[in-house]
Image (cartoon, rainbow, N blue to C red; front, top):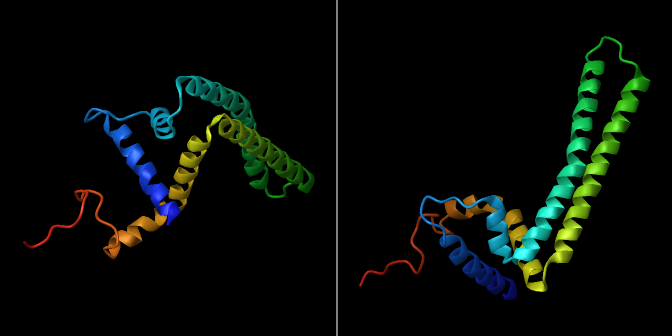
Length: 159
């Protein structure tokens, strides 16, 4: 029950913030995150630095990974690929994917360490909502949730 109340409160906080946009204005994803989590300007600046670091780390690794995968595809397309070369390329790809994963984990850890307890709660709520989101259409199909364009509030009565 407490979780349901927390979810409702967080949604109630997030909707007015997002509704402040002018009609037709589409907020940039970074602005949405900053608003929903209620990041301070200092936190936004710190986060931007984290994103720059992540990009500077991951981009070269991703480029190398694409090259390794292309070499592997080419090698496997030959009539008799050398098993040693195949194995080496597979291991290089795994190493690069591991390095990318470690960089992303470090980014997430650093981001979360910057947040207040309340902001961590909001981030947790968004993560839980992401996991349940694929189930929403099924609930709508059986009338357990209102259509997305239905007005908020209780259903009309015949009075």
